[in-house]
Length: 235
Image (cartoon, rainbow, N blue to C red):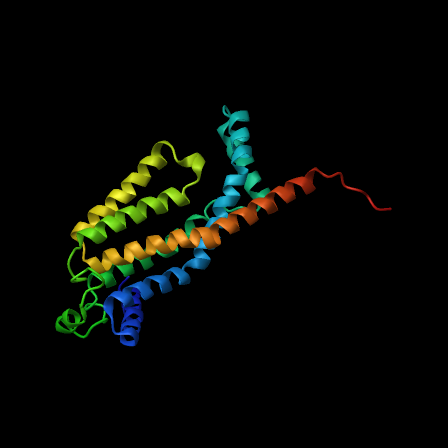
């Protein structure tokens, strides 16, 4: 984990040396990381969409073999094979991203320890604030509000409408509340990263993920139509 943190620290250091502004460096660093993780995000989106498409058939199997759990599992595994879906493939991007996110947290909380700055004096000298934020090393309550609000909007936008009930609805408020609370206790530099990351995710959803989902849905619909067409045997 320390290797990842040091590597990310090196990237942030290079960006800072180029722009010579810590706040702008964090923003550019955040965008760069999101772009690097984009292929994993797209893969996860495709996997999630594929799983959503076969959910009605899975429910049919569960209902049909509700008293035969072994047969039920056998048929579901068979369905995964026919649809060419690995149910664990959606988890893989998250597992890959997790150590990266932990590394990011560590770098932005302790930039000196990860080589972004030579020592604490150099770090404090570079901390000239950002916009209304006087210091990126201390919590900023206004930014905490923006962080919580952006987390709420992100969860609202990216959660399918049919899932915005029950536990998922609660999760939306929990994530927003946690982002708001963390903004009150963590350095503003870290909160700035979360806020920019949330805003980028929202933009990414509308510009890339939403069109991708629409395309996948259209392809899925076309495949179903083709399956229903009678096959003509050529003599």
